Amino acid sequence: MATADTHPVSGEGYEIKDGKIYLRYENTGLILEPATELSIANYYLDRGIQLGNPFRVMSGPVAPTIFIITFLNRGKGTISFTPSYVVMKSKNESFFPMNFGELWDFISSLDPPIQKVIQKSIYHSPESVRPGEIITKLLIFPAIPHKVIDFTLEFDFLYLENHEMRPVFYFTNSEKKK
Image 1 (cartoon, helix red, strand yellow):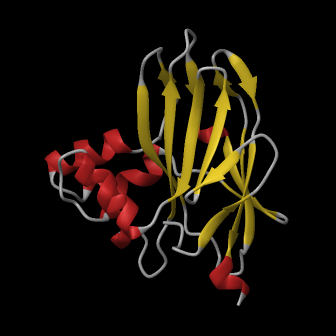
Image 2 (image 1 turned 60 degrees about the vertical axis):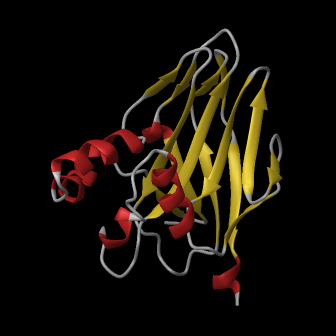
């Protein structure tokens, strides 16, 4: 998960409120936030299951980097999102979201009912958000090296209301700057 000290930084085309990034296009948009132990636990609690943070055991002492993304579609068109088209960049390094195959070892180690909950809570394949829908899921990246302080999340081929966007969101890890 992103650490509690990972914060969004101002950039072009979006606003930040309460540690979350808000991007709007007409009657559609997204909310992006770095996940913490508490926000992941609350994500599952809001869906009626008390899981805490099941990802903390996923990769040993260094946890994966996780973001919570909500797509809101109050428009007439469709929102199209492909998680594999998101890149986390820091200087000359690039990190890509974990795909279903990479997550399978972790998911398959869980009890079958929990497996289904986890599968449905992760962006691991293309998503379409139809008019009137709101979808919130987790986007999971592998653990990023401790030396990474400032980074971007770059979305390619994101379609809001059938309008192609390529937003870039900026983040910093204030704890690592100390």
